[in-house]
Length: 225
Image 1 (tube, one colour):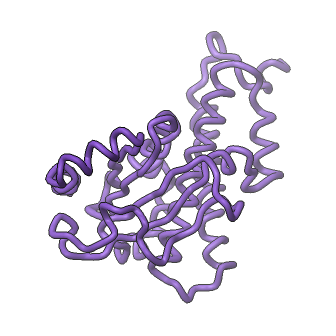
Image 2 (cartoon, rainbow, N blue to C red; image 1 turned 180 degrees about the vertical axis):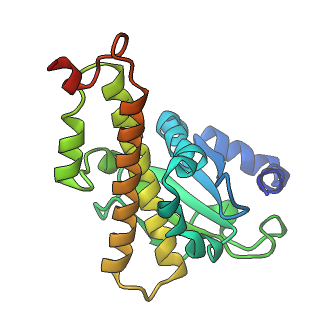
């Protein structure tokens, strides 16, 4: 499917493609590694390319690394999701929220059904990444886990992983709304926060297990020995 969507984008009139390019609009594709759909299309500004790559990695890598029960909680939701999910990836948004789904697709190339999409409508949401960066999803847990690290490579890795899991949990949260629009917000939020909590906790445990006492002393518990 990524190839079909890329071919569709390239088949549009050259003046449209050049206008997008000069305006700095870019598209990146991130399939979930263990399933045929949805294909995530990250629509972003050229100046935000570094963070957009982190969004892609969250889908392509961190989803597969999450505990099996976390992924199982979204099995039916992703099965019923649109074939194509567009993320308008931006720095901030007017409403001040982290992200939300769009009832109508606003990203112009995907606003109407197309053969490349199997004739189906796409789904769309936005994510305001600067707001996500300042968000503590679970404040007590986030602070407690962050305190296990001191300055150094492990701290940077942890913070990057935490941000990607925040991106991923927001994406899953909004896809949940797309598929089950009548489901109570409290239930949707509980599911996405549980995914984030358990996936981040698993990452920390795996990181601890991989440490070498003689080489890597980035965890503060070792600094206290």
